[in-house]
Length: 86
Image (cartoon, rainbow, N blue to C red; front, side):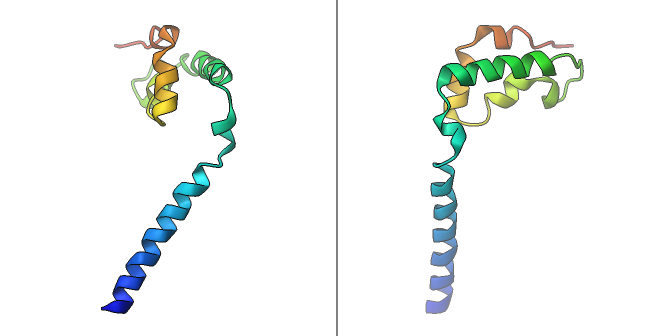
């Protein structure tokens, strides 16, 4: 039973370590105004497709990444005005 508990603790610590590594991701250091510029350019280049999958709706994908990206995407009305619904 103790070996099982230690194995579970090891798995939990590995997940925690993975979460901590993501905090050092370089994209976290990109200022919001640069991030919004990247979003804008991404949506310009990807909206040429008329399909109804997520790849053709970059604003939807961008806003689903994390709370910071959602906040920035929602602050850009031009991003959402490009979505074509058929």
